[in-house]
Length: 447
Length: 63
Image (cartoon, rainbow over all chains, first blue to last red):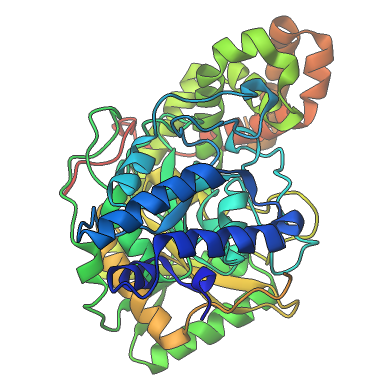
């Protein structure tokens, strides 16, 4: 296996055993970027000099027996809405042209503190909404990688980086991960600090992770999770040992949410159902279950919350630079200025009711399972249909996507596992068990 | 009032607010988005939220 193909945990092990040097690993990834990124266009900025210098420091520390943390010497990437000290952070927008933050987003800082090396910034749709990034799907360059975390998904899938930070307000982390054949995690709202991440919504923004295995996502969460006084919505819930949790694998009791299957294409239903049958043959107990009544209003509530939030967050910039915004984000801001306050509050009450009505299902099953998306990645630039992610972005419940097969077109498909608040350890354990049964996602054929 | 009537009423109100606040040109550009928002508003207005249901701002407390 070439160094650029190593996952984050495998690379960290190889570095600790001195089978590989951080400098060679950074060089291998930059060589890979130089080979494929002209076609994939995942990177907004590659910090060649900074990454080299950090790799050199990491190598010297290893030689002295110093390991700063579990990702010592391992490169990672961050979506270009995450602040990165000294590195241009433009959120895919002319509004932020040449903006250089003076500090790192808390999640970026925590991963760096664990010894990792920030290799660069990954393309996003403008301000993580709908105006597309230039990025293409490594499985088929005619298709979108999904969005808004487009570059994060494409870069990990094309083996240009083993681990990436993304974000999700509606469906922007786990959907692109699934479209690109990856494992993607959207933790519980408040599990990872959003401090230093350009906001879209005060109560639906989540920092997410993408990698090529459940183990790598668990490792990333272990490092990035935890309370942060700089983020008022950041939780004080204790951080569990997620890496240890995935070693305790057993067949889960799965609640299959049929409403989602009814909205998916026949191709998606076939692939997902085949995967569920394999899980059942391996010992999972599978029941079909129904979503609660409030599911009906979840989509509307999510947008009635996020649009006014976006309008408020962008108010000052919009007042000065409205014409620099592309059409999708501009319309989101303007629509948010028009939605009456009583509808905003009613949507927040629907969120509360939906969370409460989900509890019996979450208590009865280890995990709930749905197809990840209604269809595989579409052709063109539109970032795909987020309807299967909306309930969990609205409610803050954690979800993870695990690759489960290929569509007839050859594009990857995943399913989604959902669990109760702050129980990511059990979610990752169930996902790791599914990964054992189904195997890891394959490699893309488009690059 | 049924959901479709409410949707039409909300769309009219949003159009008027857009013209007043953003001008006629932007209101026209926003027409598809206004239709979306009117549909969302009709959906939540007709959903029977429990009378004593509080708004949920942040996540539930940790277990």
